Amino acid sequence: MSTQIPLQYAVLRFAHDIVTDEFLNIGLALYSQSVRYFKVRILTRYQRITSTFPTADGESYRRYAYHLQADFDEVARDIARGQISFLEELPNDISIILKGVLIPDDSEIRFTPPYIGSATNLDVMFEYLYERLVERYIDHQNTGSRSDDDVWQVYKLPLHNASVLARLQPISIPTPYETFEFQHAVRNGVWNLLQPISFDVANPGTISNKAKTWFGAVQILKEASVPHKLFMLLGKPHRDDRALMQAYGRAVNLFQSKSQQLDLRIVEEESAADFAREIKPLIESHVNDE
Image 1 (cartoon, helix red, strand yellow):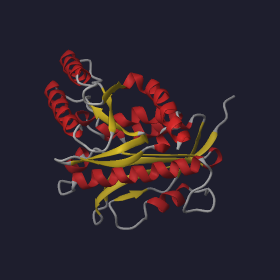
Image 2 (spheres, helix red, strand yellow):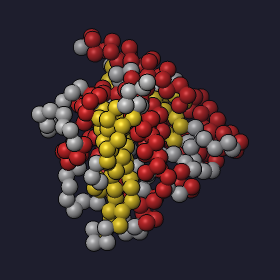
Image 3 (cartoon, one colour):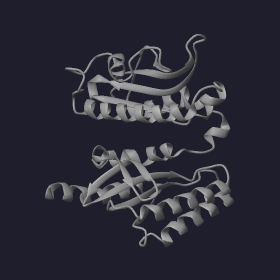
């Protein structure tokens, strides 16, 4: 008989107007003290928020949600090691952990009181709860595509399992024209830039335009003084649509045709686990040599 693991979870909510207290569910946190498990996922797409609250600043929300996600990810790594920087020991109550990152005040993002439960597989339970409490209420138009952050989730777990995720850090790459910000980078002689790019969109024209934009960006990056290699972690269209897949294929061919010239590597999501296993020894060999 499978063992039931006790758990607690809380829902993260966006409340734009503290007077009316209207809110949208925008994230989930799940915690089990007994197995040192803590996971949070925050919705970074803001279309539903700005549709519901027209005066909300979507870009500000996206930036804050992204940084909040990074803070929670760091806490999750600490909990897996059995300690949290701002607490002496792992608490019984998930609210104590959440308050350490997201201080309850009049901010727009809040969390609910904890709910209690149990499960045999915490990852499966997390995905079920996230879909039921957050994703289910996003309209079909928005769920028809994935953001770059959504695509990053595909690569994130294999990188974590390969002990690579914890080594990643943000970096700025200056060029004569503009400075590029990368959230996931690791150094092994040169900076390896891991950039998720979603081509899981609604129409072929969007794929073409996004591919051209990134192709131009890569050529500008070539002039950076910081030695680097760019890994494009692609997300392909999920809809069974011939035109979308053809546009995606042309985008992949465009990048692959210039991959050596531009210090570029294409990775597709079905190869996420292979990529994580491949990059792990390259990074570890550099760390051991330092």
